[in-house]
Image: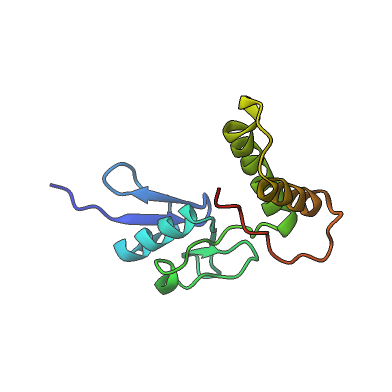
Length: 140
């Protein structure tokens, strides 16, 4: 049975499995643990690029090189949503939930839902310029 070795090619910015293909010249051997951490970081939003020495490195959304030892304990390396983006997404979900729970039955949503939706809409459309966090969703 052929032993597997993973290589990284800076020229193609990709990995090669020695069992499947011959890596291009100039490729660097990548330790299994590093490969796993790199792939984990990419799944968490990081981008892959070549370091100056031709080895693979991953960067967060701000362009900072990620220490592979910290990948497992970090939730995300992708772009951080602005409050407006968060409010827009939350408003879509809340409006759908409110409609499903009340509107489609011809019922008026409780005042707590109306207040919540109004607050989210104000953040999403930019009329609320003072909030720094989203309001708490109603529990019922």
